[in-house]
Length: 453
Image 1 (cartoon, rainbow, N blue to C red):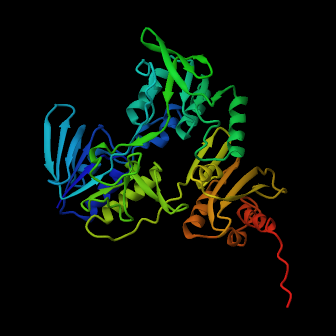
Image 2: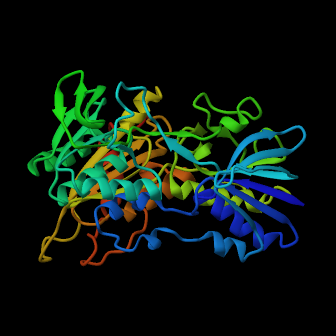
Image 3: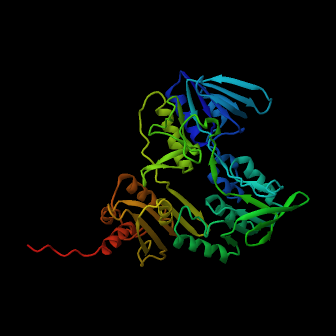
């Protein structure tokens, strides 16, 4: 059996590692554009900020390690065409220019995603950089040495993490986003306001509700950013405006969402039974809505890649779906979310109800106790939990992993009120704050009059 794998970051590396062990007789070939595999881009800001000193720690595998498993590694090879009828692949060796032609019995697409680059005037100027892979991270570090005024465009996870890194490095930092607040895809306003206030107290300039219209430069290097609301001097621009799936190779050949994300079934199989897909190039089953969503997270990618390997020959193990669970540490705050927020529910035209509680993370008799804010979103008709968000200076983010399980299993807010959690004063209170969210939901229910016989 000939297996071809295109792309080897999170999903690809997970798929290849498992396939090499599951199918030792198979002929497995990996095609990868870069000269490395398995780069943890979620650690990019930590690397840029100097928290991670040895970048090799951001790789959990290598071409040599995969090759030692018996895999043929075609590094720095760009796949240019896939004929799904003849099951052939055409690629180019980016070092020598040599054309490569190959065949496959099973194809695993793990081509990932790529940063969105808007068609903005002047975007080709020097010192306007993207933030995705290892080489881009190194370029950011090198260019930032001589930059004092840094502009980050895009207030998602990577954007705000880079803002933190640059502020700690003593740079003058400005964050621009077309939305009215930061992190709007992950947290509701009462959470993001806390982070924004913290940013501004540190001298970080927020330019929300602003869209970049053009870049201007001096001697070919960016020097100003013009938005619909102003003009800002800058020495360096980092674009973090989102990602798009890398799926052009299969356009019109397998079913996709409108944004190009490949649709897969619960066994990671595309509409072509001999093609499997996993990771950031895919749409994933989203439990809160019971539909397909594009959620490019490393956690989703490694699970999907592992399942693609296990199900390659025959359906063996189903994907249980995702809640889009994620977490973030920014300056003094720890925050995490899972499932639907009120904001995302409104965009999807889904009617929800939310309950917010504030409490200390452990008893008042302890030397220190930090405030925790938790918000749980439910279906008001079924009472089923659809989402949760938490923020605190204490690290209580693991509670959102618990809430993710609640969503996945269909738990109701009323069941959450009386779920068994341990109590130990070092960690929490006799009534866990998750319980209290359930109790709060019950307290807001109208009291029912007993029926008269």
